[in-house]
Length: 314
Ligand SMILES: [Zn+2]
Ligand SMILES: [Zn+2]
Image (tube, rainbow, N blue to C red; front, top):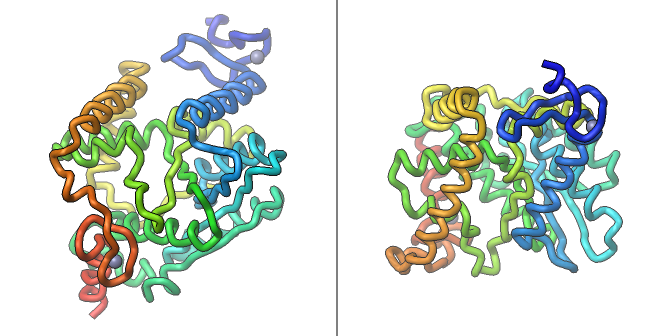
């Protein structure tokens, strides 16, 4: 199949064949296309404005490494836009030490300031001391705390936005998980942004949300960005990893299905958002009575989970 081996834009060999587009691209045209897609996502969703300071959530993994490199490429020369990086250490060694070193190295090379926050300092907790002893899956606790800490760090560096490295696969998984659980409230958050009308809540943007995971992985390989970011404590039996492998199987049988799940999920989410009064009272943001962070109930989810973690420590 010579067709598949020659770039659709020039006569060089392809590095990728996109079944969902029916065309292949060479290294150069693939890289140009990745940059174009990210720019388009940012523009279409009004993600960045003049005067913004953007905190880039950096894990050292491929997604966030590509995101930082791209944001620096797109906005690095703009004097009216500032980029800083924020990273979280959950207390899982040596896994996180390695990716934090990668993050530090990257920031130094790109001349970006990096702020690191540790669960140990903020929550008096190292994940590796409590994993597998908790009521819910490890990732549930870690995910909520990471989100809380990234928000706090972004505030501390004076950011207007926080950029999260979620890709199209992550979004497809989230949409399908919300369907399975029948969670309309979370589904509504897919297209609508998070509740932002609280001054302690830094607006989240997702510049990679229209790119597939495998394309980001390829880009990171071609440009030598990021390290393998695979937490050793992910439980294979929890819903997300199951949904992930299910969607990968579907995509290989039906190229393009992830894109259509995401576009339908966003559309549905818009409709839910328009009819949102179903939980208007819960949408009111207030401050957690324990930690003061913005949340929708008396005590935030992170503080509730921390209480469970304390019990597991005993
Ligand atoms: Zn080409
Ligand atoms: Zn709280």
